Image (cartoon, rainbow over all chains, first blue to last red; front, top):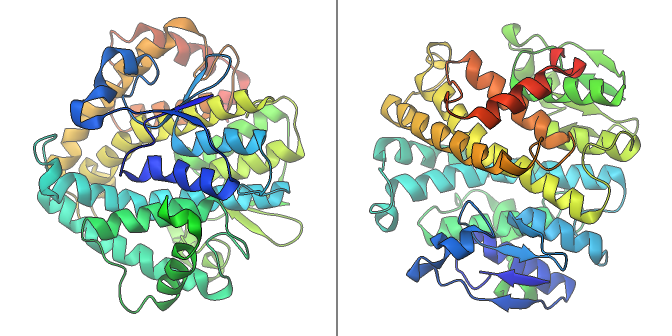
Length: 203
Length: 203
């Protein structure tokens, strides 16, 4: 197995780095220098036709993209510690929370990034009013999440899971581009401190 | 188990209906009349704080939302015929394709729906220029998918899987709101005919 493009500050490669740190796994790695647009070169597009990192090459030559799918594969091969759940109920609840974080929180943060940030202005047509409107969506998502966290320590239940990894990389990316957690979301702030104190958070 | 709100024309409830038809499963169901805003009433918000259908109530009282997570749970309980894959490689590839269809194709179609369609105009602030710009993204996604389908009959490989269900409900929803498959995407059109001929497609 070989992992391509995990050396990247974007949220998706970081998901895989944190996952590997939590599992105590080390994989062979190959850099994909995004500044040189290596992820859009013909050679890399054969690995992922969408030109996105990270990509995991399996021993049979299969190329897997999508950070969550890569981690799901690694979980199936290395079950402990479990980050996607053990019973079918746990697995479904964690999957639901991965999706909820992506659709409710990552989506508005990604829209703010794409449509308002100076660093993306040269890469696409920005619709700034639309982008700015997503700040209210992100705030609403944080308030919803704060309510949800009233009965538990982690995103999907009493233990740390892949849903926390997806949430942490999303929240930290938001903070990096100026999307703050509302100050009154004390449970989200406490959760952030809790997951950020784990050694894996530096990955 | 009990399924809430599957009686709905939106893509997500249809995913679960097609999945159940492919599995040959029947579940107890309860209507959630969206026209009466029953999905936003306090009683339903206790089942899904996001106010979205469908929701599956498990026998232990857990409420699961997110159509893909509901189907994933049902697959774990009723493994045959497999729609999420059997080996860890198959499972990861199918998961990757579910995500690719959602992020590459469903995302622009959802933006067109939310930001250009008369039926959503009263429900949110529409950014029409942004919405219209997504038509080019949907076209590009269809051309990318057409290339991808050059070596196989179904979205994630040689057999029908959950990725086909996610794609079919997305494509049909697009067609319903005026987002057509580009005429030169002959492989996508052939795939659509192939999956639409299955009895489950009428679900």
